Image 1 (cartoon, rainbow, N blue to C red):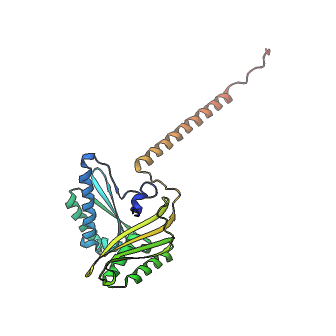
Image 2: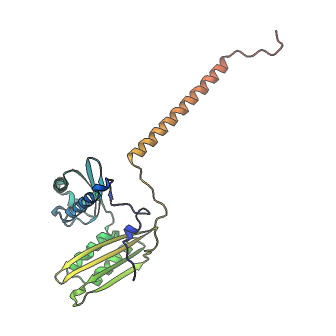
Image 3: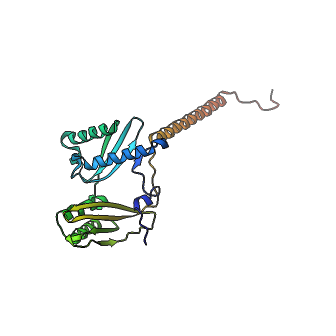
Length: 261
């Protein structure tokens, strides 16, 4: 039996980062985790986010507030007219957790290469009774045209309203799931149809990542800036001492030769 593992979780700390960033006391860990899950669920079910093509949600906890970064293919839908939708969503989340919420929107510039958005696009087509083979094939072809190195999609359930459930797949290019440095995006969505639930899984291979640039936080940047200023101050002091010594040597009368009267 093949042991299946989530491609994202397998690469955490290698070329992927955590989607929730916070540190709490071990006693509060479970409550904080469930609070995160409730926030994600509320965002997914909120009427303001319906049809917004949400690809990912990041949660960053600060001492006094929670920052939520929503990656979306259609930012205008979440923001709404004059920011009405995002304000309404922020109030609902704030009421739920009882803390100050800051929402940031990041646009997914190429939705045809994002695994989660591809999976949701296929589920929408399946709900609309589009042929599952056509939906799979078009999704993979569009991803390959957009420049990815490999794309794989699998659907499972009562495909086409068949009596027995089955699994079908379509693949183009390479999907090296065993290579840790491979940048593989994974997405999953479910289509709830009149004849049962159909699951959709998508894998997108974007090439290999040989090094990760670590983004430094404000504290580290400030520390480095202070060290640079301190070094510049030492350099200025050294130059000033050297100039003073040179001036002193120039003003000093020339030494008389030995034996001269």
